[in-house]
Each structure stands twice: as structure tokens, then as C-alpha cells.
Length: 231
Ligand code: DX5
Ligand code: ZN
Image (tube, rainbow, N blue to C red; front, top):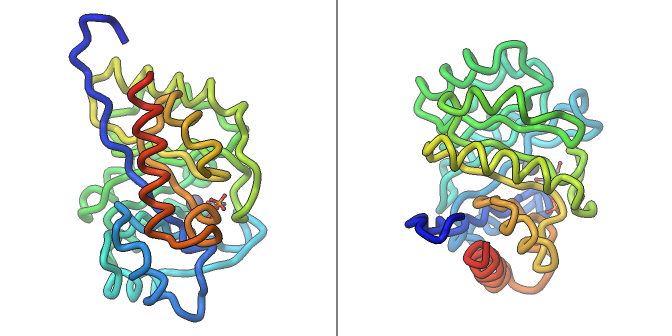
């Protein structure tokens, strides 16, 4: 950021992941995170990742009872076929994996046509460069900071150069593409991600497994904001 820059860091978004919530009481668990920006819903198919969670019917019902909009993270194969259905049932944001789509641009356009924000997610081993020339097609890029599949894993600091390259490209484009990080985000790590340009933070364990979700959301938001302002 140059000295003459008028750029003001955007307010950080905190998206708690219900992967770590009590699956027997999801309506109550959604109410506990009403001060967050979006609820992050991890859809897994036991094929793209070795874990199985929710499908479209569940997402539709969660959307009906949630006090905040849904940020759906699809960890499923054949995203080209399945992803549009999640926009049709009302998810505000649908993020599919680059590794699971044969035509990300067409898929993103179909998501937007159905009224959803279109996101593309990258596993730790996937380069971001091929997607940086497609920025106008996306509303969000998700840089995974763990291997997708499970909550409670350790944050991969070595993803920070990739995050920074994405942040630089977004800044140069002037587009309002959100940069999301997911995996191992806590009070100890959120500042590092914010410093490297993330503005949207998924946190499962750090929201649901540490004290009261409201207090955790506020603390994570404050930590991200203070690090982003130092950048
Ligand atoms: C992992 C999921 C994450 C997970 C994050 O594959 O995509 O959204 O819920 O959990 P934590 O914050 O515990 O690492
Ligand atoms: Zn996720």
C-alpha cells in the first residue's frame, strides 16, 4: 500500500462453520452465531473428501431457519452438475472446488444467474495463478489453509504467499472479490491471514469449541481488523 493510497481495509467478515456445531440441535446452534456475517456450511460427499456431511435438502432447511445468510462450501465431485442446485435452494454464496469442475467460468455464471455469489476454492496444492485472470467471474476466492475434509486441523502458514498473490491481483483489478480462508483459523492465526490480505474468515472450532460463540466472533473480528489495519 503506497503512502498516497486512499484504500481503507474492508471490515472483516467472520463466517462460523457449523461442521463443529451440535448436529442434533442445528437451529439452536445457528441462533448462537446470529452476530456473524454468514454461516459456513461444509457440504462433503465422501468422494472429493473422505468425510460426509449435508446435502441440498439439509441446506434448504438450514436456510429457512438461519438468522444469517448461508456461505456454502462444496467439497464434492462433479461440481458442474451439483452446484447450481445449492443456489436454487437459496444459498447466498456457493463456493465450489476448482479441482472438481471442468468449466469453472460457466459454472460461476450459472450460480450468479441463480442469484448466488459465486466462489471458487483451492486446495493447498492447487496454484492460484490460472484463476487470477478470471477474477471478474467470481465473487469470492477461498484459499484453503488445511486439506479439506475435517475441522480442528492446524493452520498452514505456508499458504500465505499464495494468499498474498491473490490479494495483490484483486487489489490491482479494483474488483470487489472477497478472499476467504478456511481451516485452522483461531485468535492465534487470524491476524496472519488478515495481514496477507484475507477479508473473510471461516472458523469452526474457534467459534464453537472455545467459550461462547458470540464472544469468539467478536474477538476474531477485532483481531482480524487490527491486523488488516497494520497492513
Ligand atoms: C474443512 C472445512 C472447514 C472446517 C474448519 O474441510 O472446510 O470449514 O469446518 O474447521 P476449523 O475452523 O476447526 O479448522
Ligand atoms: Zn469449509
